[in-house]
Image 1: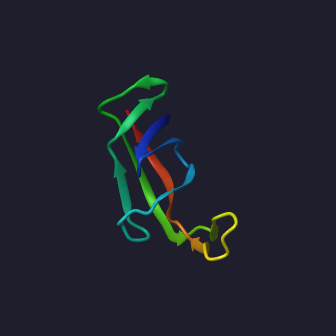
Image 2 (image 1 turned 90 degrees about the vertical axis):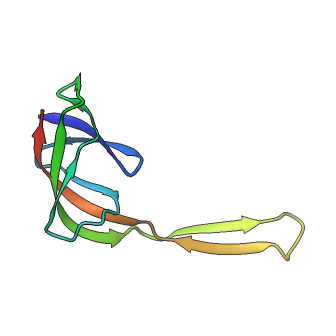
Length: 96
């Protein structure tokens, strides 16, 4: 079965066995997580569906550089970096 579910303010398309990188979740590695905010199951709108997944690991994405600059003024140059945390999950079951 195929499903579209929502977590962390984003929507993900998944089938059983799919590996996804989602926004960081509070569950520990090896635990199971259940997503109840399912929008579609097999192309049909669903309010009762759910998606179960296994947490594989937690980590951080590669570093993004943020550079702020004001033209004709050497006092305003600022460089920052950001690494977004993520959780790698594997979809184990899609319930209609």
